[in-house]
Length: 148
Image 1 (cartoon, helix red, strand yellow):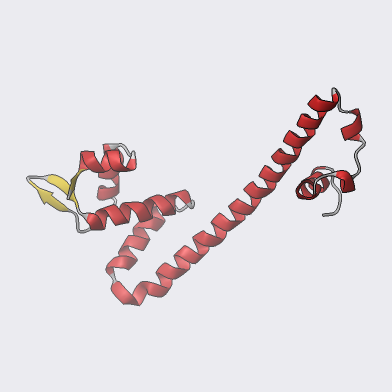
Image 2 (tube, rainbow, N blue to C red):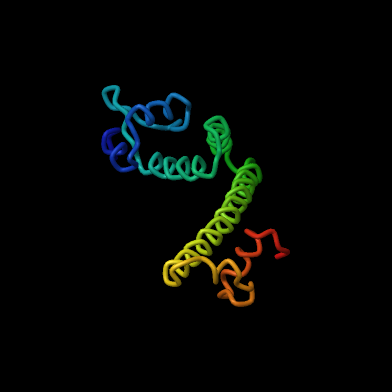
């Protein structure tokens, strides 16, 4: 059992956020002792799921719906699974975009490392794509509008 202050520190969340989540119905079974919220392992697990869903781009109203589905038992398994499948797809798309961005950044780091070593950009500006390290050929083509 944890106090709101302990949970705040554990998750690096302001106490006001935890109170807001409670007011939004995200902890439907939270216990209170002398008017103070006492977080059990169930609420800790719920917070981990909330954190995951928020990081995946889900809004509080949709997280509320998930919590409602959870309270309805087995009949909502398919809805809950679909919610996670949808978020997984969105996250994978974001990862793909970030990987592409990272590869271009890696190419530009390589580019400037060589420019520094060469004392200029002349050789690198005229480099043939086949002369690049294999992992940099695709970002080079993407950056220069060549077919990938």
